[in-house]
Amino acid sequence: MKLKPKKSAKRLKTRRKPSISCDICLILHGTVLLHAKHQNLVAQPDESLLKLTPTELAHAARRLLPVTTKRTRIVLALPSTEFVATGLKLPAVAAQNLKNVVRLQLPTLLPGVTEPLLLAVQAPTDGEQTCALWMPATRAEELFQAFDKVGLFLNCILPRPALVLPHTSTACQVCDEDDSTITCLECSYGVIQRWLHLPKAECDEAEFHIQLDDALSAFTPDIKQERKYRVSDWEELPTPPPTAYDYAFIPPSAKVRMAQAVRKTKRSLLIFVILLLIGSMIGGIYYAINYEQRLKQQLTDLKHRTVTVSQLRAEVGEIEEKIGLIKNFPRQEIVTILETLDKLIPKESWITSFHIEGGNVKMEGYSPNPTKLIEVLTKEPTFYNVQSGPIRGKPRTKLKFTISFKLKDFDLAAYWLEYFPDKR
Image 1: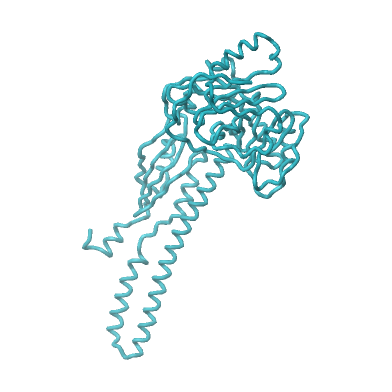
Image 2 (image 1 turned 30 degrees about the vertical axis):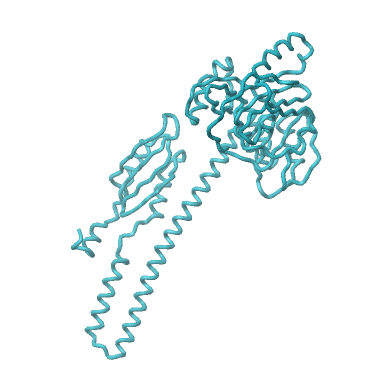
């Protein structure tokens, strides 16, 4: 089938970085499951499926892939029948607000649809059209749970035609055909602008060909075409390009799993920093005590050299005065403070930045209700002068907060007055 488009797209100025990536790509074509070429994956025979249920797909994937101790990230490429495409022509909007803008139009784009849908869409080139792809959230979740039961981590799901989107920012047309359907799409600079999905059962009707020609007239002529008609066309396919992951659907549980992994990494980093800080403080105190012991030993040696007692006492007093700056410096019990914050802060809130200096604590993080968090911290007897900085974000989302407070048991003023009375 030859596509007949109309005009070329304008140049996209910047290239987005995909937010996710995977280790292994599985491809479903008809009733055959195969995997994209991967340097660390030993070739396996393709798996034939009797049914396309999530459980059958998961067991076929388990038989196809070798058993490893590492929990590899898997992307599953499904045929176009699993997705719904809607064409859009939007004004210039911020990339982070694009999905919200498209979701607001869902009742108009897909009237009567009430079930939760996952959305994949990219910002269009100025003045051009873009396609929003939709997938039922329940279907994605069922696939994730089925893969999870056989020990596989389904990181995301891709439309099969997206696997052959060009690595470069050139315009391209893709035609993906299987036993039951034909899918034609056109992309420019990584953005799918047109999507045409047709059931083969209607190919014999004359009216069908008239409507098909009308639909294909919207495509741009004389640009590169990729055609995939048979199962063999998908064999030895390279791993998906970064542009493909722009149209990835992440199952809800996979998103939760990835968020937990990020929080665990941040928590481990925070613990490492705290331990490093504590170790540095202990090392400094140990050095000071060891230094004091060496000086005392020198004092003992001096006594044997007939140095007068008054001179030795004066030197020891001077040493004690110097060491007192370190030994008597008010300590900030960082571990105790963090344990207290861990008990007070609700599970749905977390800290991303923690700074303590001179008994003053400043922290930043995210919470659905920063005001309630401030009330909780105000009631803690070891904290006082709890203040809130600017709160950023939108209602009903995780709001970014800045909170500062002081430690009641940290008396730096008394220490400063004792050891530096002339420098107030």
